[in-house]
Image (cartoon, rainbow, N blue to C red; front, side, top):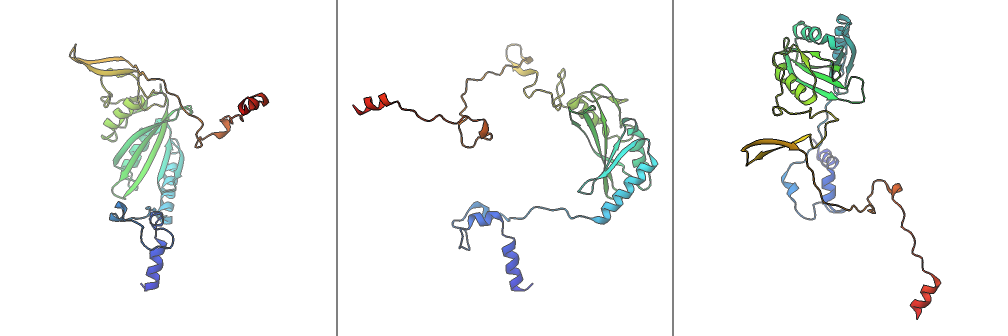
Length: 262
């Protein structure tokens, strides 16, 4: 690379931290800092692959044509990730097809989780992340349910779904039908509620502590005592200045001026 091109590259890759440490008109920072001991790199940008995107779109259409009864929507995200939205009754057929089909072979269940959106009619979105080692490809399968409607367990298709579904049941309260051992996996015995629900209080329902008198762990109602605090809302950094009342101007009566003058 020519010297001129190398110099231009060095100037163009100058980060905002370099500009902050180097005052205008100087080539080196005013004082050495700890940041000089670390190599600064830019953000990692995933390149856009047109070929991969077309292949994912074609495969999504192919699956939708074979399983039109269960596939409700197919989409490819901006990061070339294929997503299938399916009916809850199609969990076993769709996962079995993606596992056994020659052109799919998604034999590995990398993750299974849920999302709580209380504003929806079916507030829980169940997400299956599948991996195909044969084709080095990933696919995301989504379905939906509510608090009372169970969904089929995927343990018969992927053994790894056993503990994943127990975690979803523990955190969100989604019931999986035909699960071999559906019980809590993270919280304690007798725990009330499901912590990852949006309507679950941050403080919880009970307070668990160890009692020296009875020599065991006891659960008590939550008691959050806090002293009175006064907040100053006249800060110039207030996020909503329109709701802050303007200070009243100081008014001095004529009689008060005469008394002050005396």
